[in-house]
Amino acid sequence: MRAANKVYIIGIGYKPLDSNAHEVISSADVILASRRILEVFEKYAEFGAVRDKIRVPGNIAETLAYIRDNHQKEMIVLLASGDPLFSGIGRMTINELGKEAVEIFPELSSIQAAFSKIKEPWDDAFLMSLHGGPDPEKRRKLPYEMTGIPALLQIHRKVAILTDRENNPAAIARTIMNSSGLTMFVCERLGYQDEKITQAAPGEIAAMSFPEPNVVIIIKDTETRTSAPGFGLTEKEILHSRGLITKDEVRAVTLHKLRLPAEGVLWDIGAGSGSVSIEAAGLCPGLRIFAFEKDKEQVENIKQNRTRFGTPRIEIIEGAAPEALKGAPSPDRVFIGGSSGQLKGIVHRIGERMHSGIIVINAATIDTLHAAIQQLESAGFSTEVSQVSLSRSKIINGRMHMSALNPVFIITGERD
Image 1 (cartoon, rainbow, N blue to C red):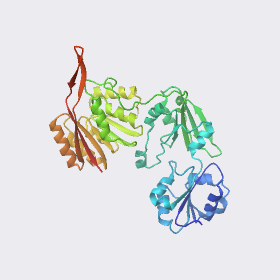
Image 2 (cartoon, one colour):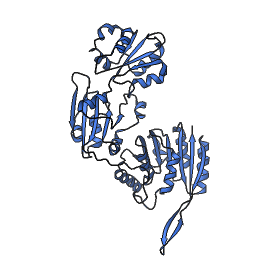
Image 3 (cartoon, rainbow, N blue to C red):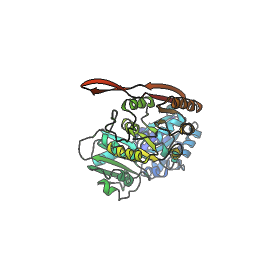
Image 4 (tube, helix red, strand yellow):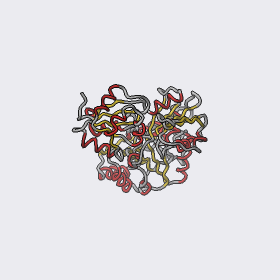
């Protein structure tokens, strides 16, 4: 027996409703659908019998508000595209009401349908969504960006992408058109009568336009895969100037203390050669990374390292902190490798922008150590300190000797 205190989400698009979904939709008091979904549902056998029950809210916020206010007294059916739990409204509805109040009848996802159209297996593909919709805040929280696609293609032979008006096939193509051995498929308006599949090189796709909705699939033409830079790059491999680079062993401890999330935003302040950013990008492909550096020579080093190690999604912001921090999205993690005497202002600015997260500061002097602890605690961060005392071997007169490097204090600030 269907209940009025539940919301039933039915995915549609590619095949007739099964008997369970048919029973639910026939029994509904109210059926919610967007205008685009309604265009698809009009072709279903059930449409004529239930058309008077259909409401078309203006946007997702209105849809969720109606469900929240009415699901206890009305049997509500929400129509969705494909699989509602794959970058769809299913997640938001569950977050709003809880799992017990939601029942889902999935259809094929558009990505699953797209792979069937091009006759390619998809169990080895990386799936991502660039579908942010009109909400700027939702766009900011997208787990991946177009600039990260080249790095993803270093790890995965196939990448499938849900697009939107801004993150469209042509824009995606422009991020990879300098890469060789790639084929793009644009699968437009799947499930509609005018669906179409376009197969071409990125350079060709970049000059085209496509109607919405569409799915992009990128496939490397060979089975060979290159590994993105991960953990363990050395100072000799990373281009730097005048010895200004976070030493390998210190970098390892720094990255450990940062406890990088799979997704989110990392600020690398006083990035120098970009060594921390480069390794963070290799460890966490879904992380958005902003490297702040005021020295033009070092900025050029970061650019060359970004190209050398295939991490184009690192965004370089040339300028001095804290002023340079203004335009970047709020961070989840921050590394401060250099502050040029502006540590107080930098920590204050981070404290204003970071709701919860971790800051790691490297300090070479006692004065900087004390200042860092004072500023972090004033900004509401709990602190801890580690000291890395490092010696490296070298050969003198045929014998191995240990040579000490200057110790480095690693200060960690955390806010829950």
